[in-house]
Image 1 (cartoon, rainbow, N blue to C red):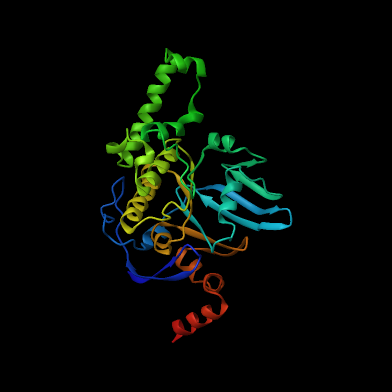
Image 2: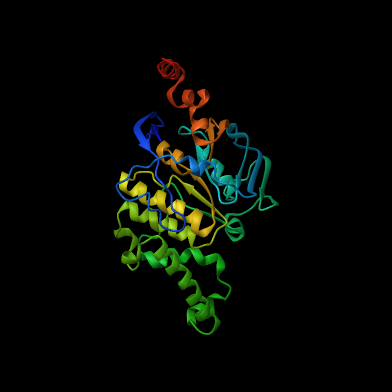
Length: 316
């Protein structure tokens, strides 16, 4: 299957990114059809995958800062074992939506239901304990600490013994830390970063730092993984690696994923459903190809005049 891909640059401009063709996706951890150097390609089998029950349900969410409306009446859901994307031009409210979900912002209106329970005024720490993990648009790692130690911080909410016992590294505290270290090593192997496990994060190139941040989120064993532009600033090879690891996380670890991404080839390749925001409102949602092709989405990215020219060329 070959089709025109779209990309969105740092200014929010939507432009053709060339043609892309569909890869296969093997079951299990390794995806033989997506190797380094291959193009990211849309696969219709991803979008027809059977989804589980709804794990996150957002109902009529509205958020304002004084007189500025960041989100207005937003409603969508995320199902178990689903990869769902939030896309839209810069300033559309995408990151604000993620901040609402993991408890950084508290909406003035609406309901958030996670795993069947309504959440009210939740703190990010409580969200993490309930099974929501997140990466950030700007890398948020401890640059002076090693890769191993940075990933270990993702287990913070899982520790049960006290600070004094851990300082002595004795008895139950020692046994607990060893168990957590085993979990960290599993994720290090999963993301293929064994060679840099003792390297200070500040010495790593950008793409590997992004992978370490993904590892820190995965080691928390989340039910819902939130990724805020995980491929921003990456070259094609780095994007392919991260795309494969995202697919592997869903397949091998059973995690549901909510992702903000500006690369339309990535969205159409790995996502099951898409919700499109513009000026804090939902303007389209559904299967990736259908949602992105909606006239209101094309208009939001290109402007009305350019959208009309694009539509005229498509009909010609």
